[in-house]
Length: 78
Image (cartoon, rainbow, N blue to C red; front, top):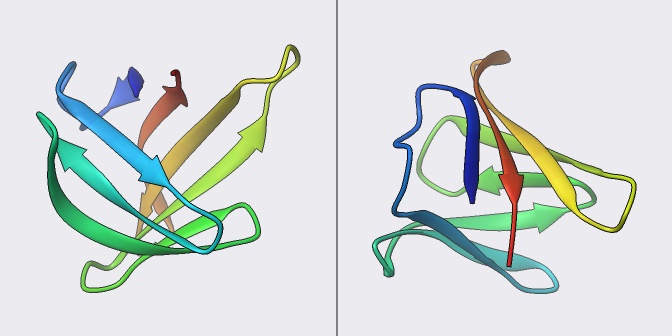
């Protein structure tokens, strides 16, 4: 993940996303599992949702929301 803005560490955070679930990692260690539904990642034990949107050129950008309020923006990179 590449941090664009907000409350997120500038490096070390990643995501492993499968067909219907995944996990957010910190320095490669899994820390927060989530369920993938459509273009939303809903965390199982945190009150956080990530919303993803396709970018031109095939990438994805996203924003993290806590209680419906955006707290960060990021881009998914391989």
